[in-house]
Amino acid sequence: MINNKTEKKKIRIEFLGILRHLRRLFYIRFRRKYVAEQLRKRKGTCKNCGCCATMIIPCKHFDKKKGECIFWQKHGHGALPPVCLAYPFDEKDKTKFAKKNCAFYWDN
Image 1 (cartoon, rainbow, N blue to C red):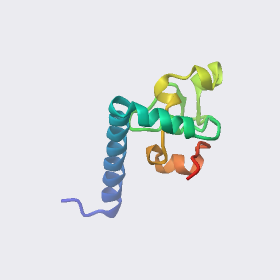
Image 2: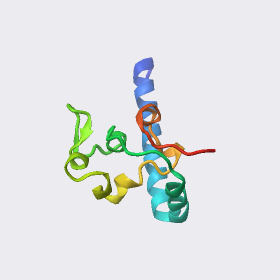
Image 3: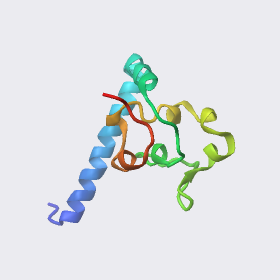
Image 4: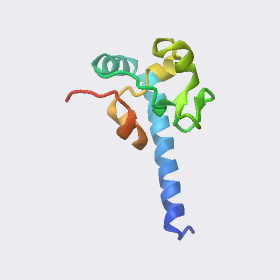
């Protein structure tokens, strides 16, 4: 049994990240209309903050030292892979870090 509060917090954060990732996979695969509708409603522009690269599986194009996407720097936002372009597809899709840093938003 885990008694250390720090360890419990780490496990909780990882678990929530896995749930968010599974939700994302489910919605992109089975709720495509919803995702497309939310992307149309999304406002703001990509600021290359790296939020899309800090999901469960780290992105190989994200430079941790610089805190930015190398692919975005070379090719621009429009050339990003679909999985990146669709992040975030709604407010629930954002990580805690993204809620503070990502420039995309939706009007209620």
